[in-house]
Amino acid sequence: MQSHRGEWSSKIGFILAASGSAIGLGNIWRYPYIVGKNGGAAFVIIYLLIVVIIGLPYMLGELALGRSSQKNPVGAIGAIKPGSWWKGVGYLGVLTGLGILSFYGVIAGWTVGYVFKMFSGAPGNFAAFISEPVQVTLLLAFFIFITAAIVHGGVSGGIERWSKILMPIMFVLMVILIIYAVSLPGSGAGLRFYLMPDFSKIDGNVILAALGQAFFSLSLGMGLMITYGSYVTKSDDLFSSAGYIVFFDSLIAIMSGLIIFPALFASGQDPEAGAKLVFVVFPELFMNMPFGAIIGGIFFILLSVAALTSTISLLEVPVAFLVDEKKFHRKQIVWVVAGIAFLLGLPSALSQGANEFFSNFGLIPERLADPDFLSQMSFVFGDFSLAFGALLLSIFIGWVWGAKAAAAEIAQGSRFFGKVFNIWVIMMRYVIPLSIFIILLNLFGLFN
Ligand code: PHE
Image 1 (cartoon, protein in one colour):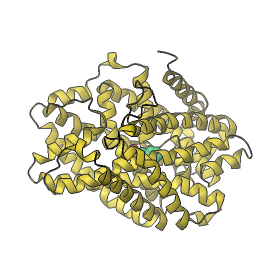
Image 2 (spheres, rainbow, N blue to C red; image 1 turned 135 degrees about the vertical axis):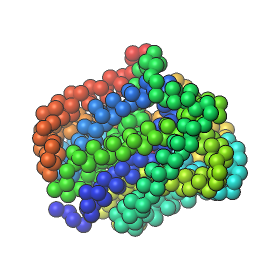
Image 3 (cartoon, helix red, strand yellow; image 1 turned 45 degrees about the vertical axis):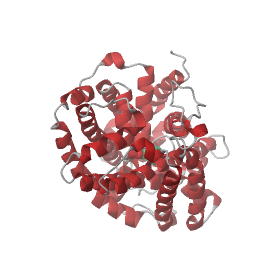
Image 4 (tube, rainbow, N blue to C red; image 1 turned 30 degrees about the vertical axis):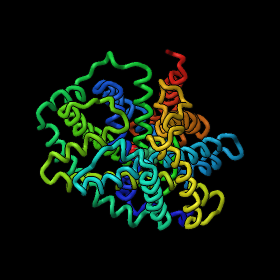
């Protein structure tokens, strides 16, 4: 046992921390705009199918690898297959954590900016706000700083306690906003768009987007659940914990769609608006409500908190790696990693109009991602890298470590996993790697 690495204080503590990682901008900012871009209800169905059939069993694989080895992704893979190239998959995860943190921190910074804008009662123009270089840079620095301060001080005490208080408040606020949005005149078209499927809109790219969104939203494919699983005790039930995490994450995503789309159609806006959806539609909605400035300000505080529990987890992966494997002191290395994440985030921060070059970066083809640097980072790290990492990790867990050994780890402490033991083994070895592989082929245009 390496108890100095720390353990979750309880099963609830683990579920909260992992749900905190999963629930974030991915659910409230990214999910609605991905749904909007990919045709609405039919996408939602494909998305939920992928979450249950691929996301949940895959999450169990990562958690099992973490708990069994009690190590970060690089260390966990190295413990099972010492001195092989498989360790590279762990390094890819560490790099992906940094890559996501860099652009995620930019958007999280915007949410902090909107706290002040909402309280001021005049949110103003979003495009003007994000193209202002000094503001966005300071907000990015601020968010990365808070993240690092918390990871520096250790996560369990403060963040677990605050998640317990703030997540329920966010939930209640979301329910109020759903009721409000659905009651707006003209909202019905939004509900139809969101809830009545038109399967003619489904093609390979839509399925790729659903898979990418599922992995992103559930924090899968970069070894985060390996890291968080490494802090779980042997007597905990991984199976039911993963069930809760997946359920909470999907619930919050679905709820945010029930606010966004009715409001969007009621105010006559375009569901394909992309990344700016939440920042344009929500403020407008709030400003038409009684006490809207206050409720809107509180909403963006909670969105910032949801983002914070995710950035903490993103920073924790490279930090855990450097502390475990390279024997750095957590309290020092945290600031170095945070500094790198900030520098890596600068081009994304300046890519929304502040700087011409980064705003029209365009390295990744137009059919895959918008030309601005932030969208390109989001595609490379938020979509491709997670899917590619998940493909390699599922092969590693299913074949190199062995799905039976992994399943035995999950069964330990679980009351019900025995019933699905054999099904899970087949999923891990065949269904998950094959489906990710086919979807990735599609990414390279082989089926187009
Ligand atoms: N799941 C987080 C969200 O939805 C983002 C994230 C991805 C966090 C990968 C950690 C790892 O906002």
